[in-house]
Structure formats: C-alpha cells, structure tokens
Length: 152
Length: 440
Image (cartoon, rainbow over all chains, first blue to last red; front, side, top):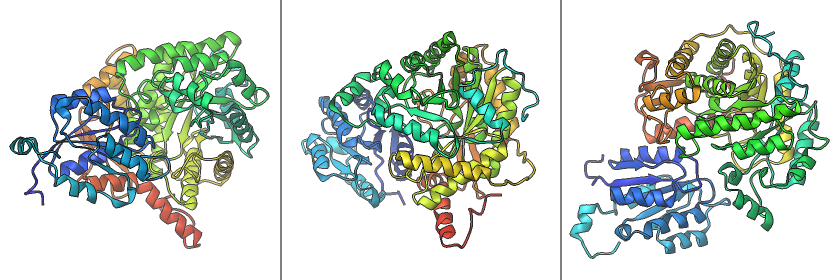
C-alpha cells in the first residue's frame, strides 16, 4: 500500500521534561509502516540535543510527541531551539499528544503555531489519520532543493 | 516461615523499620498495603499520612516527591512553593527539615513506617534529607530509575546510586535500619517479559547489598497473566533466598503499572486481582492503584478506599493450585548469573551487561539499551519474547512468534489489561460475570 510513498527522513522526539516513551515507540512503528525512515531520540530531549541531531541528520520532518501535560509550554522551548539554527529554518516541525493538563486548548495551540510549529495535533480522539494526511504534503530534501525559494 | 533457607540478619531491625514492620505483618498473616501519595503542602501531606495510618488495613505511609525534585531542579520547586503553585508531590529537599519533622511528628512511629518514593536517577540529596529528618526507607535503583526516565549514562547512575546508598546508611548512627526497595521489577511499566523483571530486581538488590543495605525489598509489577505473575514472584523469592541469604527481605508487588482501566469497576477488579496474586505467590506488601488512576492524581479518600479494598481482597480465601514451572526461574537465573560473571562489582557488571546486550529491555529507548530484544503478548495473554538479542537465554526462549508487531498491535498490547478489565467490570456490574475469566 506504500508503493507510491516518497520515504521521508523523520526525527521523532520528546520534550525536555517528558520521560514517557511508549508514545514515541508507537509513532516510530507507525511512521516506519508508512514507509518512512525514523530516528527516535527518546525521552527528555533538551532543545540543544535536538538541534544538534537535526543539524547532523537534516531530516525532512521533526515529529514532537509529549503526553505529560507540559506540551504547550515545553513545545515552545523545543521549537525555538530549532528556529535558532538557520539551516533548520525550513524543516517542518509538528507536535502532538496530551499537550495540556486539561485537554485541548486552542489559544495555546495558536501560540505553538506562531512560535514555529507547522501543525499541532492536540485532539486525542482523531487517531493517526490527520498525521498521515499531513505526511503526504511534506517534501523530501531533494524536492525542496528543486523547489528552492518556495516557503512551506 | 516461607523461606526456610533464610539466615537472620546479624542484629534484629528496630521495630519501626519498614523491614521489621512487614516481617511482623507476614507473621500475623496480613498483607501490607501502601499508596503512592505525595502533596506539595505539608498540611495536606500530613493529612494523607494520617488517613493512610487510620485506614482499615495494615498500611505503610508514602511520601512521593514532586517531579522537580525528581530531576534535581530544586530551584523550580522552591519557586513553585513561593508562588503557591500546585506541585505533584512533596518537595522534601526544599522544605525546611523542621517542617518535614512536623509533618511526621506523632504520625510516623513504630507502628507506622513511612517510605519516600522519588523516581530520581540521582537521589543523593534526597537520601541525605530523609536521613536528616529521621526517615529510613526509600526505593529505586541504578537501572530502574535511569533507563526508562532519563538520558543519563548508566555508568554515572551506578556511581551516584552507590554514593546515595552510603548517604542512607547514615541513619544507622541514630539506631535505625535503612531500607531500600528495588524498582527493577517494574521496568517500563508494561511489556517487559517477567524473567527479565525478576533478574533486574535481584541485581539491583545485590547492588544495594554491596553498598551496605541489609534490609531490602524486591519489586515486581503485575503484568498481563495471573499464572505467569505467580511463577515470576515465586522465582523472585527463590533467587533472592539464594543470592541474598543474609539480608532481611520481602517481595513488594505493584498493582498494574501500564495503561489502567478507565471504569471504576475495571480498576477495582485489577486491584483485587493484584491483592490475591500477592497472597497466592508470597509477596508481603502491595502498592495499590485507585479508580482515578486512568484520569488524574487520586485524592486522599480514593487512596484510602483502594487500601481498604485491597486489604479485603487479600483476606478472601485463595486457590491452592499447583505451582507452574514454564522455565521462568531458569531464564531469570541464567540472566543474573551471566551478568554477575562480568565483574565483581555489581554496578560495573550492570553497566557492562547493558553494553553487551546481556540485559536488554524491550522498547526501551535509552542510549545505553541495546534495543535488540522484543516482546509480545501471546493468544493467552502471556508476555513472551519475540526476539532476545544478546540476552544470555538463547534463542530457545523465543517460543512462537507474533504474526507481526506493528503499531496497531503495540497499541492493542499496551491496552490489553485495561480493555480486559473494563469489559469484565461492565459484565460484573450487570451481574453477568463475577470476575475476569482468566483468574484461577
């Protein structure tokens, strides 16, 4: 079913304060099943480590997953660490999970988008469908070069 | 006595120590029950301890620390206290010693021990503080509080934990007996094959013994199949009796640590099954969970209810089914012996073992974990090896294989217990079935 998938290089990561990992294991399996290549950075990833790994690996996409309820705050730190590296400015970054302690919060989600996230998946009830739909829109590095100059 | 091979420790533990309290309860035929409970406010923490003590159960008190203290960010805990913000536990390092002594005064005594639970990969400051306020019991381990919850190198965790054990040992100066509980029997909460849980729990206990502890409890977390859990707890007791003969010890069982049933009746059924499992297999203490577990941090009242329900379930007459032997003890023994052969010091042996993949926790993402072992749930709900990597148990440990191990299968395995007990709870509520079908 994945014959027409363009394999993306994806970095999966948690936030600095979140020690949960089953969400990360699940996402890795899901993304690999969809035909993509995944590097999973695991729990409690500081922004500096994420920026260093992404500078080294030049992924097509960064997927941040967090379920400890601090995602709306910690996500800001994570995305600003990536924005601080000019070479990573065009890499799309998405975040999902249980981002707040009291369910989805549209105002906090908008703050994440303003801070640099491409998309926020904060509705636990939708399952993986929105992420799959989004993946189809992500360009690989070579496509990005071909379309040089086009903003995401 | 349950363990005829046990050799008494050289001096009897003081009556208020956790080890001595559990030994008395065992002699009286009672299961000790204990909550996870921690509040930022000293007054609320004290109220929680009082309510635990006054529950209709043989109970031990718990002070669970907040996550800032867990990661050593004491400044953040101090700021939260100053601003009056809610903490998710008791910040024992930043509260005044006098404040914590007042929390304990008249509550904790010879008839009511209190354990500090923390989750920290570096508990040195925590252990120094609890010794200073007159407490003597805590938990964790160099592997179990490093691999799942931090990025800290395992080698450094073992040296920090060695020093922390020495900090705790200071309580001997005031005539107390320090007690530590391994968290190694709970790795990742779910989907770790029981033989590996047993092996890590025993290895952490041997680590504690090397660094001075003589009163130790060995943990095991309820998994997916009662018969397999019974075999695992018996294997744990048997290995501990052989390898820690001169230590005051008991097994502590954790009610299910993975995705918890969402319905109150499902949650109650898991807890009751854990209590029966403890009694049947010879675990002397049970860490309970509440009906609120799947949703939020439980209240004091919910904790007391769980303690009393677990105590009642433990009093129910149990089955007398013969002990199963599917090779779990053999597997756990092979792992423990191979690791101990790597180095005379258990800390170094643990670090080398993970480097070589002799210890390899399925689905654990820590950089020091080899990540070649895999587990799955078989058709009967037993936890099995799908791949053993370099674990010293040989490929024959892989009996049968899953069809596949995709993301949907992982989700199903993670929620297997919650789904089973939620369904059983609905049936029981309707009067159609009294208990989950797989309970013997």
